Image (cartoon, rainbow, N blue to C red; front, side):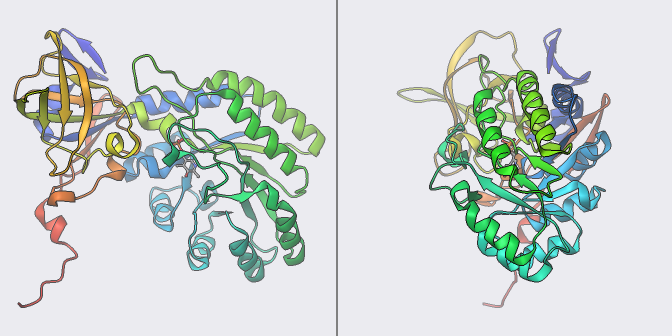
Length: 410
Ligand SMILES: *Cc1c(COP(=O)(O)O)cnc(C)c1O
């Protein structure tokens, strides 16, 4: 988003006009930014076979999925519904990895029927899977290397109490099951959490994985998951993908040589690809001076953007309507009847009632975590693609809230 002559633009589209056209609040996504991020990853790993699978749960609008398919990514799906969305968006089944956690064997069987790659994260299901399919359907195994990392305990998955993956200490048991049931293990997977800045953490994870990989002779790929950090605050950083690429490429090449075959390296980023490409616009309903602060009360709340309340996430907030106004201190809150504070003590250009504010980094885990709490309607989604805007989801109506309710006579 650029400020040109006092007006914010996204790829040449005037932001205020956009919000006025589609109404507030509204999510806006910029595909050019997504493509840039994808290309950054490809470039960092250009010397090895690399596949980037977009993590569907970050942003699941069908048009976004189609866009990713069109630029050549695969898809990481964590539920059978995400698999179905992926197929509808035109992904080839073999370009989808189904990485569910604690789902039933029936859901896994559905995945097999749809032809997608299956990633198994516990020994019980691995055993049931082997009993049904033997070596007829290859699998990937999710390993938990017990690396402690990530921005928040809710998004850290590698710790000892984590429900994700099969512990590296249980590998003897995995091998026993794999050999007894003749299971073909085509891939190994780790995903240690989210918001990990340090390249060292990824390299440590990789080291453990490559060590594990030596004992599986049928591998085609190793999936290093994701967890790349993106900058939420102005002085934050991205994980240094270029450097990770250099170090990991060297290490991976050496491994492939020892292994005797060139394997594919897979990543499955969500945030890295879409976080910065998303903008959430809302309107200021009221400026409320209390004894201790000045609240800016918006026409949205935790029903549309829950990350600040759920993960203590920081989203930068700008005043689109008064970009040159003098900076003042505000506490920005929602309209939900529950404390839904987007940010305390934020320095924002002077806010007047009716102004539009924008939340940055609203591409990942924002719309997909929205709800109808307080019987509020979910906002529309707009995509800016090659300089043109497209409405890709309509604003909900009351009918959407009533859709599955059954009326009985009382
Ligand atoms: C959520 C998730 C991702 C994406 O994580 P980001 O931090 O958004 O990049 C990747 N893989 C799996 C298995 C996940 O559950």
